[in-house]
Image (tube, rainbow, N blue to C red; front, side):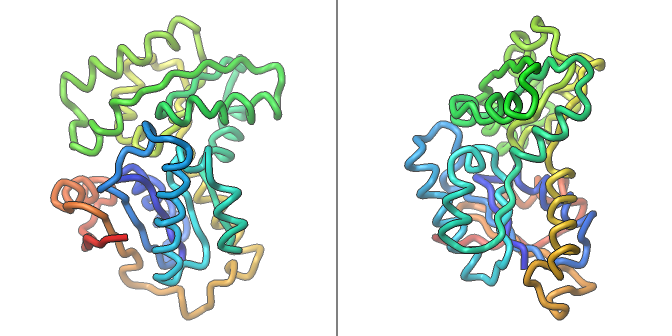
Length: 264
């Protein structure tokens, strides 16, 4: 079983990609909605929350962990892999690789939570791979709460996105990394506000391809043949009220999947 977690609903963009690319793999998802957003918390709190979420998934039978959260990927990926002794996949690496592949002028923008931007993980990794690149970052702390509330097409959301993107637009970036898995749910708005000539990078698809390659190369990465099935392969858990989450999850996944509230 593949265990995926995020601070809230944004990680379902990764679940959607995994469903498309490894459709028979069983998935268990945890959205830590009681403590969302992670992006305005300290590194110590982010790590503690991540370890609790990962522990829950491992107890549910996860043999592979997918961190569908840029904030956790920035602060805790290596520690989670070392502690649980399981394959761990995170979203930052695939996003960096894809951005460098598609960028024409190597003027790359990054938007993310405050914690992700302050970690400098994206500029550091991009410049390690290509020192010629120019990287410009902007923290967008209000976007996660707006997505969690389902305010995807509100005029208020449009104005906030425009304000956040303006400093990057004047830098004449040609590529923009959506450095939070919530942000693809605002992709149309972000594209309009940043300009149609800017290529948006959503790491969910690239991450899912990495998981697929691992499963194929490693004999399904420790998953047994009986783990792969033909029916409904996804279970979703949340740590707070499931009402709005269930509605938005249906829009993201284009199917109705039971959402179970739990405590961790």
